[in-house]
Length: 346
Image 1 (cartoon, rainbow, N blue to C red):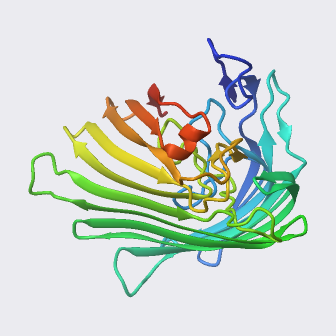
Image 2 (cartoon, rainbow, N blue to C red):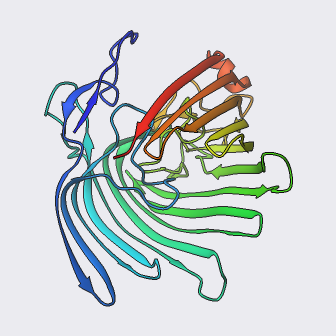
């Protein structure tokens, strides 16, 4: 079950925030021993998240998490090899009670596999294909029916004091009469200095996500992040991962075994100046296509989490955003975001 309630919202809150009561997950599942592993067959309403959650995730930031209606099967063995296949439609939240239903304008299917390189210790890889059909998809180029295919790979692991998570994907298909050619490359690398006080982790996240170089030609270059984790860049959830270049140097400090402090700085730019800036979930912001500058702004991020008990975690974050020249030209202003949360597992 899920219930999302808001107060003091200026205007009408979106249904991902205001949804009084509904089913978040309700499915039947069968597990069978097959081929030295376990086969799972599942049908109904369910959450899905794959890999680093860059393209398929549960959407943590809003009150109502993301779910899908459909079928899914997975096979996993004792060596952490896993293959998932699915055919689903995303669930469209609606204000009210017990009225959420499948979004009939979208169909989503794919296969996702993960395994370890046996010849290289602590190195793992993912391979995947996703298909998306969407009626009335909207980009700065216009509105049309979208048939999009995504193929990608991810490498992740750790060695000594280093850790890394690298991912790349390519998209093709059609958008109305236009051909789709889009791509993304993302990284999250870190180094932990165990000999220093607090054993800090120095990290660097970076993304290059394609945009559309020409809004009037017969090709769409804007990457569609499908169903990504939101928030993607910070808890303030200001930008969708489309037509973006960004860097995020960050520092993680375990102040005690139970308390962890995070600090980060995140400048953002448009990858293709002709294209728009996209706000979550995937909306081209008015008057942001073109312009004399590609600078979108920067955000300063602070977060802290306290593992109070084995079941209870308490956390908070503060984000300060200043717009760059392009968003200032479109009327963008500075802003602050604060959040507190508690998670209890049982």
